[in-house]
Length: 189
Image 1: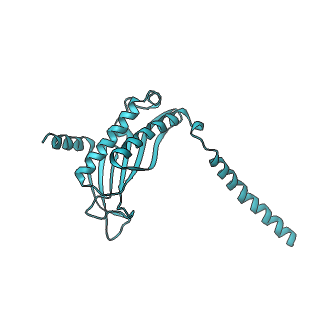
Image 2 (image 1 turned 90 degrees about the vertical axis):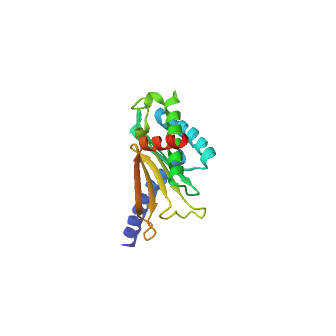
């Protein structure tokens, strides 16, 4: 009986440990060179974009994403953290500049363009998010903007509810074109 118990425990141990070990070792061998060519080209573009935005706005990359397959990219996403809050006008200028730089890098990269589903890539093919925080990493609360994003051609300015920090108190929306017109008209003043 004891022997059977130890045999069952041993089998369960190996059934649990072996898959975890295989998973861990496979991630240890992850290398950018092992990715499909489209992903390698996109990674290079994201790296250039992130370096420029970090230099220009002190944005810290916190995530990337996208959609497509090994041979075609339909959307690409970059997310940042910024260690201070901004006004809506500042958010508008920064998110537009981030999007325009990202699109310029995507559309001008000869290694990447063969894999784009749409040529040229436009603002509806990218997603840019900026999460604001205080120096202590806490989130700005309403009325300060906590998140500005560009998704599907819509810019959203979100404020966090002080009474429940897991929900937004307000979300202001404007199209990419509206935001661009506002920035262009304020630059002409």
